[in-house]
Image (tube, rainbow, N blue to C red; front, side):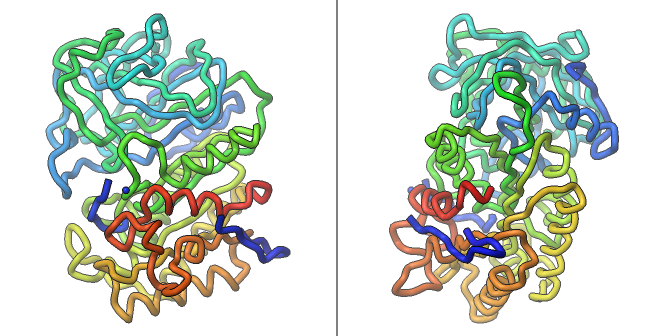
Length: 426
């Protein structure tokens, strides 16, 4: 990673062919307003895991988002990046058109699959009640519950949804398995009732912790498209580049909050039919509402460049010039700096041989990368392009780092990206 004073960087497969894609008192509040931000920034809580919600859709095969749930229990496994002695969850109905009734929820330590460890199930409360109704467009937080968890430990969050929900706010590319059962199984230790599975997350958008360490503002958010989201990494192995970054911090004895706010297919400057609001709009909802954030890493723009072509899922989006994309990046930088957050700019990774590979797109990618490297607009730069490129053909991902579609890195590629980051500069 390079800074304005030090220009150095270090460079140390489930194939998915998709686009690049790729308090203590709970409250149910309208999305994005000052009330939500105040509840997030009370100083007691820090993000341990997060994902960005988006609208129900099924561009790459069936999932549960469009139909939603009725008398179902949904069990979801996530790995936290930092530990604590209390925990709470964040639930999102951002894209719901009707109020969402959560009949009950639990948190537990993960065992295997849908099973949880004996004696670890904790019932979650919502404003001292076991149920909560989240308005359409709203976000809710559970009350904190005593729950000691360590960095890189997996936890299981279970939601019981008794009433019909309608289409569900969710996160498509989880690279993790979620489970569904008929009826109320929120307190089950055994996972045998969970007969169905999905590779997406539903309603769950955050796990936060408190205690166990002095309160400090040192969280990191990774913001971007599918290459931040982890498309091309293995299922259930936590090998996305933000996961690998969290592992580096833990191995150094300094675990940090590393939150993944990538959405496959997302763009900086255009809304899309299936990948959510443009980055310059969702940034304020997904990044600026996270507690205790010091740094955000921005890796986004390849879908703006390739999205106007016929291969973009859901149909082409308006063509974006280099100048428009740069202005989008400048908007993200301004938003972060207004909140006192440091911004690391990441260069766009190679596309040669992919469905985005055209001379025009490659010229745009090179121009944007040159601006990221040389403009000093970002507080520092990480050169992901060079970290994963084939030295003998720099416009192409090194075969050992390629998931197979020549656009998304695989597990080894994501590890190389994480290793390119200077921990001390974050």
